Image 1 (spheres, rainbow, N blue to C red):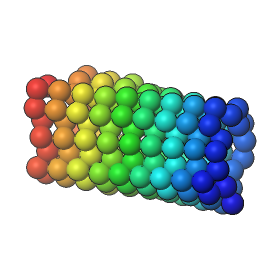
Image 2: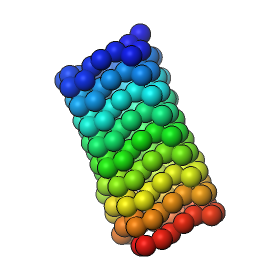
Image 3: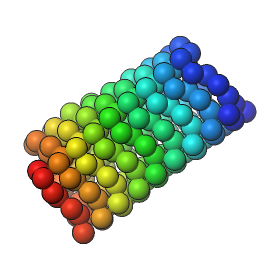
Image 4: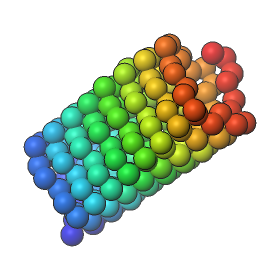
Length: 170
């Protein structure tokens, strides 16, 4: 049980985290590259500026987590809950999100190239000023999403629900 633990700036790369409770933990600036997370709780955790390169996430809860400015390149997320997570100005390239919940997530200024988002729920996500290139949204429910001043170069929306989306300043 690591609820509320202060692990800021630590090098935890390559670790295996299975059924670990990190709710409210401080992992800002930590190096978690190449870690494997399975059934972990990160609700309201602070991962701002964390290095999350080539991480694997299965059935994890990151709702209301702060991931602003984090490097999530090469990550694979399956059945994860990212509702209301803060991912502002994060880098999320060469990554996959499958069957994840992103409802209400703040993705303002997100940078992503070759991102695959499949069978996810992303109601009311804020993609304002996001730089998305070669990103695929396959069977994603994006109802009410905001795309103000986003760059959508070679983005594919396949069987995606775009009800009540706001595309302004593209």
